[in-house]
Amino acid sequence: MKQVTVTVVDPVGLHARPATVAVNAASKFKSEINVAFKGREVNMKSIMGVMSLGIPTQSEITISCSGEDEDAAVAAIEEVLRAQKIIA
Image 1 (cartoon, rainbow, N blue to C red):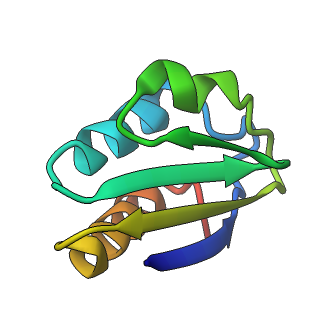
Image 2 (cartoon, rainbow, N blue to C red; image 1 turned 120 degrees about the horizontal axis):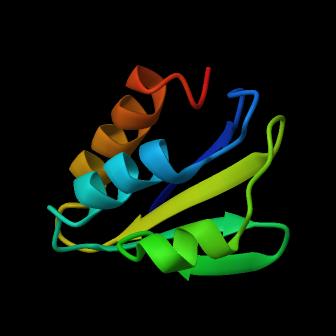
Image 3 (cartoon, helix red, strand yellow; image 1 turned 30 degrees about the horizontal axis):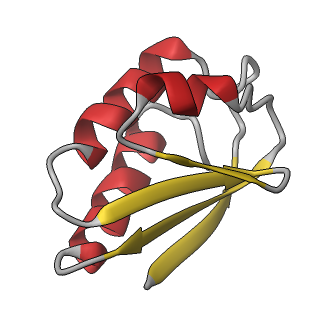
């Protein structure tokens, strides 16, 4: 299992547009990919799951991947969130 903990810096938090981009990126991988916030963990391939977390700005989230392409998956999702200026 590969995981990374990051801080959300977007003033609005992890809102719909970047969440959709992250979900689309996660969906390209075979690995199981989850995002955790405040003790809840959801499938990062589910936009409803990600949005249900209601992640505000300055929150720490943990993205975890388990599977054959876990290294590439974590790197790609982290890159997408940085490009969207959601994480620093």
